[in-house]
Amino acid sequence: MNMRESTLEAFLADTRIGERVKLEDYLPVLTGIRPAASLMVPAEFPSGEAIREAIDADYARKFYSGGGRRGLLGFVDRTRLNLQKLLSTPLIFRAGLVRSAFTDVVYEHPEYRAHREWAERLRLDTYQKDLRPSLDDLYIAREEETMDRISRVMSMRDRIREDAQQNRDISAVFLPEEMSPLYLDAVGIILGYPACCVEAYIREAERGLDSGERASEQLEEMGYPESTSAYFALYFYPCRPDCPEAQSLGDRILESVEQLREGLGARVRCHQHENMQYVAAYRETMRKRQEEMLKRMEEARRNAPEG
Picture 1 (cartoon, rainbow, N blue to C red):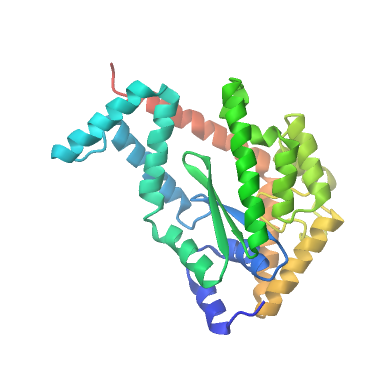
Picture 2: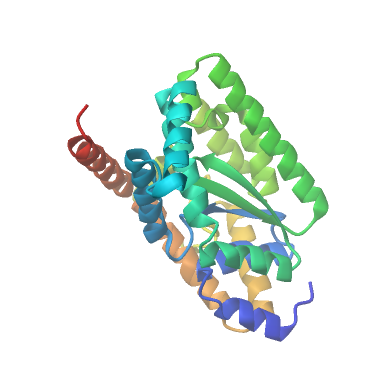
């Protein structure tokens, strides 16, 4: 992979994309160490939390005031929303409003545009797919064959969701594709994850277990490994803290990035350590998130207009 030094420096200096995403996603794909990578939009943006709050605010404005615009445009907005209410279930209607807020806020944000600009400049292909109304997966890949595979796997995901909805399966609300071994295996291959780690994730998913909790417990029971290379990507959970395959991949990522510019390897190692710390704190983090979600739901209930 040939990259002009000036291009690399400009990419690394662009603060609209976080350093972790550059080192864990973009550069390993560019160097061919990983066939593809994915990041969550807007959660993995530098301003992810502020963007999430803006989406919530835009949703509330649309829900309670029909979009907030005045005059004829406001009348059109309110008429359209009332028609949508009549033609859809409450859940689908609210999901549609959330998605509308997402597109209005995210697609115009400079941090979103940065990914589009740099993907084109670095000659990478992208594939964006909604994970839920307020969150997307953005895949980046170098080879056309990989993008074709991503497209096919996302079509598989759509069919899984459609089947769950038609069968009135409660899992349709909670990412039914996470219960499909075929889908999970295909995604693992696309992202270049070690087969042993993917197999562990699939076994746990089939039993309704959380791999993050298992990985957190392993660190507590086994202690921190000498090398943090197995934690080469945020939200990746190795089958073991000292998994040889995951450590080998993490080492190759570090070496390939270091070859691009001296000193980058040390930054990769720092992020790998932070990823391990994230896994170690996973259970406590999830507990706090659940408490915060319940708090927000209660506040929304209290603040909802009567009638």
